[in-house]
Length: 619
Image: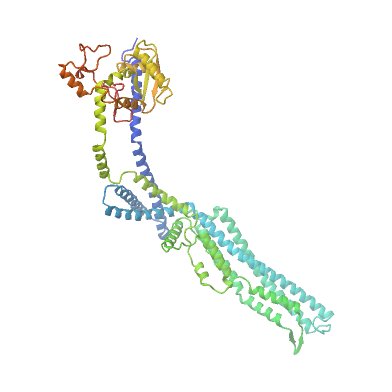
């Protein structure tokens, strides 16, 4: 018993199947429009990515020069960058439309100019996130290592000087004792408290004083070395104390480190030119050359080759104390990164125009090290040039540059995917249509089909149906008719030939419903053997059968009409199944049943003959 207002179970199922088929057809239409959606999505996504990079780069560059930017100016800059991106997309859209080559050349120059702006700011944006912090760390490491190397070398020299002076102090004291007790520390000297003993004591006091002076300076150099080592450790470990809470960068710490390096280098270079050290050096140099001395009007000779040789070594060591060149620690994080990126890109572009690329940062640092090592040599112009050079793009800098180029290149690739001149394409298509064989093909298709081949395919209209976008064949298993046996043998022979495949679905009740809706003679059968045509196989089969039939093997529609008029309207047209050809019940072309037409999924041309659709059936 069916409740009032409740549709029968079969009706519900039919609606569900119809809804499934309608959904499949809508999905196929969506798939046909999918490439257009992808293109719009790609254009919008890539343009938004390029806008973000360009806008951020421009904001950071302005902030590096003027400080924080007010909100209204940020909105104005964002709008200007949006207009820039819209102009690039408009130029690309117009560039591949039917315009003259003069105007197209102008558009090409405009596109290149706007793209250079976008790529430049985009490069600064990506360089900021990919390379700025690493570059600041490398710059600090190089500068600190350079200063530490000079300080270490100077500290070793000062320690050796101090040890030498300590040894000379002890040696002078010992000779003073020997002179008082034994004599002979100078040629033919007698023991006692005379001028020679006083000379040795004076030497010991001078050497001890100079040793203490140099020892104090050595401790200062060591303290500076240890302080720089601590700063370097903090930089390498990304210590949180090195970051500015307000900006999130290490620029302030790097600037403070730069000032510390400056003070350290200045203090050390001042030690090298210290008047006290210079005076001590002169006294030691004079003592190393002096062999005759006077004391209270008494003159005596006291040469000491051992002492003089040691003192000459001390004088040379003082003279060879190095002068440290001032390295720069670049603070290139945050907004400063955009400035540095633009500077490197500009230097590289200028060098490329001059056919002489500038050295990269690492290469320039090595060249500057060599120039610093040669400062003791005669000055050379090349050294001065190297010390004043600005680095261009390094090997690692090309990664953010390629990313910026890739985004704008992708926009170009998406925009280029259409014909340059639509009207020229239209003229080409019109010429092909006029000279092509489609008219002859359609005429032959019509003559062959109307000439009788339709009856040969009539049996297929009772077993072929479409379901969810594919064509199926339901071969009845229990039918006793010749048509059923013919179909069974035919499709068994087609198995494994790449035309049909045996399948288990759809279920039998759906098959019977489909066959019933197209008025099939086999709609009442209870069991079927199901085959599914592979993609395009059914349409190829029909097309080959119709167009492969020669026109002289079957009467054309015009010949049939002429024969019908010659026989008084009883022409020898094709017979109905089971009727004789005696002319009693012959069927004229006008009396034939309507030709069955239905479309393949995703195709616009009709495939004839094929399973028909009933009026109102969803297409």
